[in-house]
Image (tube, rainbow, N blue to C red; front, side):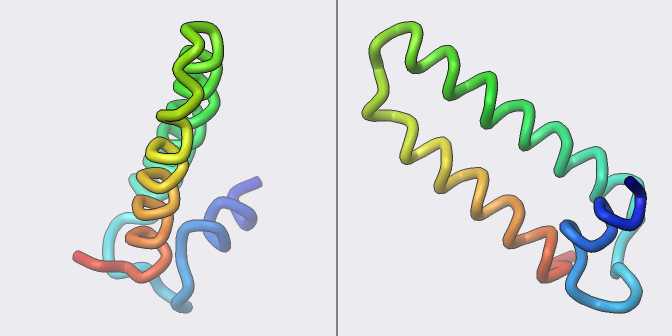
Length: 68
């Protein structure tokens, strides 16, 4: 599991910041995406889901590129 989390959150051999925070951030962002999508569907506000997905992609992109 740790190897997968390291791969999904990093595109360099060594992360520029603490890898444990990268993994926690990815897990929190993924849970927020799933829970947020569920809430928006339940409230019949599906038009906001693309914004949630864009935010998720931006956050993961920041993780992968190791921006300090």
